[in-house]
Length: 361
Image: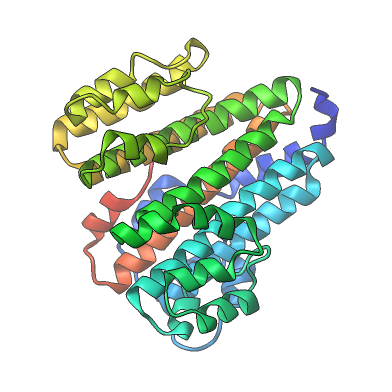
């Protein structure tokens, strides 16, 4: 790895890291109103998107759109500053947002909501611009129609592979998992094209995230009563944490607590520290709450803390770890802001909103 290729991007990412909203300030926003949040965000990196918001009634949806546009702008700026061999990986990161738009369109068809209302939940990105999304929503009557209208993109082919199973069960999660498997597979292949320390660091950061996603898939499928075979087919078949079929073998464990304990015994030695921290967090949470939603929140919080540690670990050095960890933290920030504005608009108490936030405190 040539550290000099990062001499332009690293100082900019370090500066951007300093602009992230502090955890205590994020928690305090839960007790405010939307007008205050809008005003406060004009003093942050979100200012361009907040100022450009439509002048009609302020809402959680208009704010959410601003947050997502800011994340896209941040990704595009980092791509512009990055070395050429890193840009492809970051381009694939933006595919996560394309996948998010497809999920929104699928959910809109299941819920049978109006096109204009559905578009409020979509932030145009990449090949799924506003015109393309509107055309898909206007031209489709159901989930099958949406899949057919996406067949010119790789996503349509991915969804077609599981469409028959969806038709039998009506479980939309099957289509969403298929999209996640695809995009994380693309991210992993992009990381494998890197060289030396860049490749090792990228696979470390992505490996922890993929492990987290796979654990959620197992927990959700078990809660739905899915067979062990179906759960195995829904897993992302790559990871920097587990060897071979080790994760699949944990599916046979009888209860959730035993499942979590079993997981802690099988990670690669090279990743034991970060992974053990994650498992310790979710073991503690499940023992205290016996709640699957709380367990998933604990898993997200642990992933956030892992990326914060990675950011500190990689900041003194010029490498891809700094970039990937920062983008993950930025995404958690956007998720938290979305949870806050939605909670406020729905009349949820500040204390309950704070419990939903993914914060390291």
